Image (tube, rainbow, N blue to C red; front, side):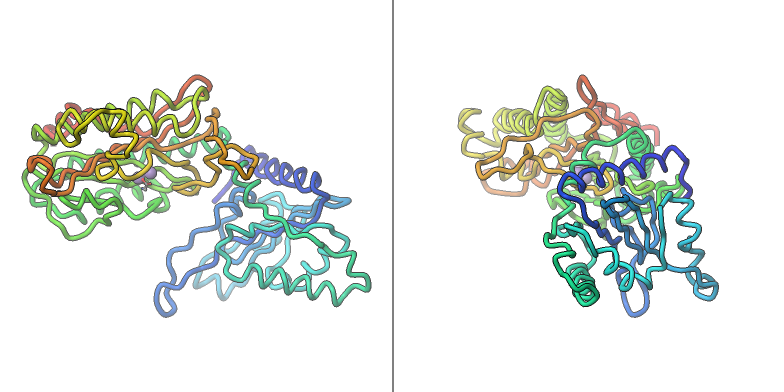
Length: 449
Ligand code: GLY
Ligand code: MN
Ligand code: MN
């Protein structure tokens, strides 16, 4: 992937911010691996996805790479990556190699990854702290490798006081940095959101009674790849009829019948950033009365959560608002009895709404970042105040499984409506509204099939 110089500036600024933070703790060496390759079967691998923390700091998407930052007398930003190898490149494609990577990604130094075991122990000498993505890295050997590099360094120096005595986790600091997106990240997320929204339009237009879930999954995938997205951000959920009540139902063989609702929760990943959209629509293009009643409740709950998604509110305000609207709707439809206050107090709505109303979105679909205010304390921490540049989903739902105490007309209705919101100075902007959400607009789109 080619990086524009402005993006390079952002990468170096992120590394600098991390180095400044490391200095504030006494300096040291930070070691950040990318993700390992994973075997699918025999010598066949899953398609490769870099580690998000590593990519955030490097922009480098090849496997077998490590970032080392030295916050010392002279700060250094060092990449270890695979060396050039014409024979292997015939099979697996062109690699950057250390020399080209140094210039292209603005590293002070680069090495062949084969040299990790000799170079890292040397870099540890004279440093106070050893930083790494200890609590989050997918690299299974990280702790073993850090230990072995320290052991080698100990063998090489007379005075082991000259070696790091503290291991510190980078993960929380990186999560804080990643939580607020910069302009180039937001531009990528908008582009991903637009592709995904159009993919949902395409799937809605392709839906008919008799269609299989996997056929709509294929429409989504076709659209995502056709428009340059590298992959899905998560396995697409396409759920017909009763399957919509299974929150993470993977698109399968089920057929959508006349009278069924279809729930699609799908989003593409573009240049390392996720999008995450859910729409629910009738297979035949026309909501039934009970479907429409519940649909409009979920949409009103989403609007209520949207209204609380602003820097004036904390992360959970949207969830509280959605729960109020959903619970009142369940009472109005006779799915719950009693008062609103009591139904919320006793969580009587939970059999119908058992998940939260949103999550951070970014490089990871459930992105990093604490939902509570920093710093940590032993008492329960308050919910985090929203801030311009944060991105989160707003995704209320209602799921009605067959049960004797539930009116049959509602059985097997599963509805979720999910959009991606960028928090702005004054509120938030939904970046996924390229696909209709009002029931009338969905019906109109489907009439035009
Ligand atoms: N697609 C997963 C989620 O909505 O959280
Ligand atoms: Mn989501
Ligand atoms: Mn989703």
